[in-house]
Length: 299
Image 1: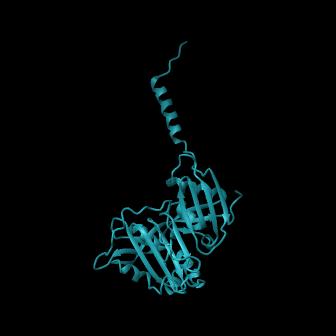
Image 2: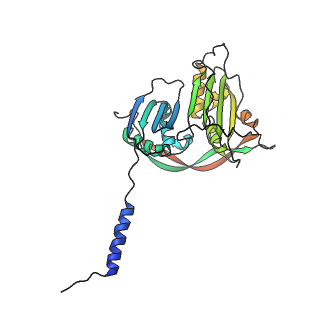
Image 3: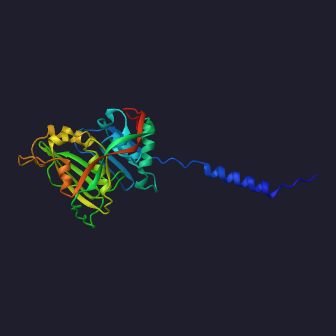
């Protein structure tokens, strides 16, 4: 007896095989090798950069690593307080052919493997500030279009340093990044060649609630803010707390004067650019940490 396979059956088998092949998960992106060590120092010097196949984080808090890894904001991370105070030096090599835009996914794997991070998502209502144009309109000057941007996920590199340990020379923020110079009377915050959404994100790290850009202004701009120590001490954002702590122990610059002046408030600083903040409510996704180790597994 001769059997014949129906064409429709063959087609169905092919379709099933193709569907199963498409359903296979993509290989997990991982660093080729990574070194994680407790930070050599706590005060100042925090940097985050990715360039030429290499990730280099110095004196970085795990909270910032989580923020970059999952492309969320600082206020969307809910976990133990030590996430912002326990710091590490991380150096990792990207695999051949990988791009710096893929570094966040590799950070996800590193956090899961080396710090045993597990979490879940929750939607929560937040009090927020809306960054809006003032009643007389914005007063912004576009950035130099030839300025080179700082590389790395999460908005480029960043610096926060005390005037007691560093001079003014070479302290300015590179394009696409920010710097914070802290003196005994306050801080000078500089942000170069950034969009308004990126500037709103920076403000969130100094204030008591998230800041969301509602200006609808396009382009890149430079911002400088001189903020008084009293303002920093009142702030609940991660950078405000750190800057206030550094300022309390900061000495003078080489000529005997604080490098940042007495300053004012965040509101006063942004009003000079024709911008303002309005209190509002918004629902936001939050990453809630279920478990994370305080010490990384061996390199």
